[in-house]
Image 1 (cartoon, rainbow, N blue to C red):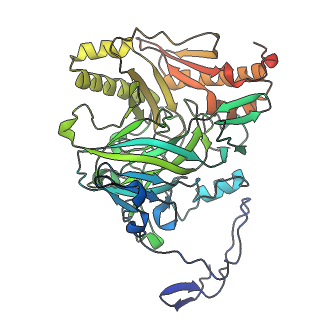
Image 2 (spheres, rainbow, N blue to C red):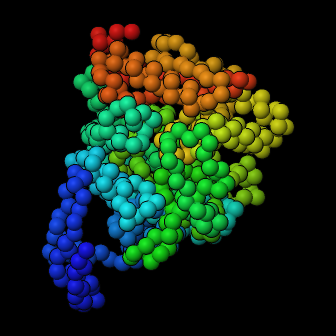
Image 3 (cartoon, rainbow, N blue to C red):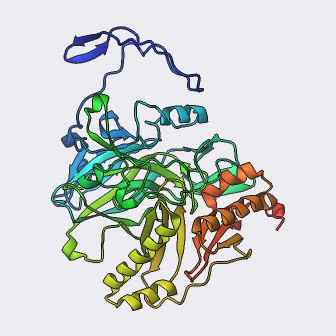
Length: 498
């Protein structure tokens, strides 16, 4: 590799000669000469005084704009050494802009080979695919506190992509990798998948995170060698952070791909407008990041991606909560919607994720409703409504929706056959929840072409947007999963062959 000479002009570093480099033949078209003159990026965080929206602020709380620019975004790493892009007080509102993945490059026109190339750059080991905006420093937030992030409004761009990659996704070995582009109708809040199929839009941030603990940042990076790990490494000894090299000065960066107690890539579709996500604080100041903006996603997110877009505005209000004031909040995020509380369970093994979910749900019910553990277990089982959020991020996700109304009737069992609202695919397994999930979701993918007049390949992509996979009420010796596809997505009823 030849490096350019550097010319110093007015305090700015400018490239004085072109870079030459032998690139692999991977389908990614790279310029062999940089743009002349080379782009110059402002270093350091922006001037916060010029981010304040005075017309919307008052004497108690401020409103800020956090744009997605080079100094406020990071590609694939939660950078532990990044200075805050914005510092706020409890009760302040921030209008956050986000970018598509890959540093903003995963947009209409990119190919799967190009995505594979940029995501596997050996210069950046342990880098996730997402573009993150942040971090936001919350004044007064201490380790052990909780930050509540309430979503007031979301505005999307007019396009989205979906990438079913060559080596990722639930059925990557059965369907060809491909990038699809879609137009998002922000007025109708829907996406036309085919002439007879419409996907309703329900935007939410796939990633909402705080900084990881100092101890977790120092764990050795865990490499997952196969997708469905039967004996994955212990989560207590799994790390996703690396020392970043080059211009980032060797600071620690944590991979954006794997979710955890810090939030991150939860891919939890309930985190939409009107919801509040309560994130435990592990580092003073909290350091809030967001990205991986979704227009829609099914429960399971089976083909790797959701309907991936960017937000021109993710409008949030952040409130600091002292732990002693809300003891029901533990070491995992909790999500509140107008009608329900949502608990989560994540792990490298889906059986263990479900065990974690049950433990956290019982703990939350016991603490929030002031009941005994057996009473909390009974409430959980009576209200059992627990989807699989995602099975593609190495750390796999489940969650439970707990109604706020304490007089809610017992929830029904998961369906096993088609009904008036859904096409249903059901599977069970005596020992492995992932096996049941794979069987039920593949049945659904095979079934969709018969009902929707599309190929199985297209059904795989549609499933990641609309399929809703839910776990059966726990019982000894069996794991059950039902994957449901809403019949309402078929607008031309004459093509319904069921």
